[in-house]
Image 1 (tube, rainbow, N blue to C red):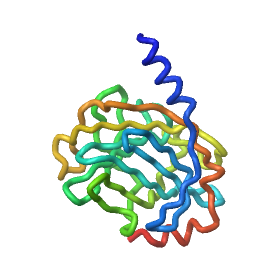
Image 2 (cartoon, helix red, strand yellow):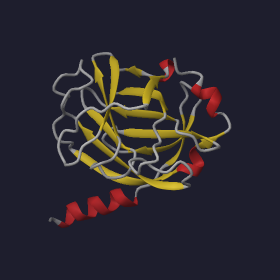
Image 3 (cartoon, rainbow, N blue to C red):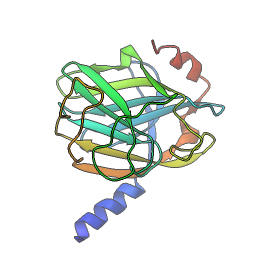
Length: 197
């Protein structure tokens, strides 16, 4: 393995989240940003539940991925992309590296309209993730102060952007980072969650 690849991997693991407030919604997040145009923010209630609010971005026709449990394999994943002017997302899970298939469960994703858009530089999907923090080890723990989340980005479009079950080419950049989940907790969570319709 090349030294540059080793250093990039090490830096990705050392990366951490920072505070971010979205001006379109007023929601405050613990967020991770990458130079590709990928970002993911998370907001949580003060007391642990299965719900969170997420904000994910990407560029152009490319896709972005989130691993709610750190690595990709055997964790609950969210893939997001834009189908024309409409940001899309689906839950995924895979036992091995490769394009993860769509999965269903008691979890669901409800968009927050004023934080969901496309423009000339990027797309953004803001959502309430209901019953998404699981107790089976496939996501971060509900009461964690910090935990590791994974991310992936590709500039290539999904094979069938209009389909939630589309396949993806391999990501062009990925990593893991330390999420400050204590900083993500807010007494405003219920007010923000009510924006999801």
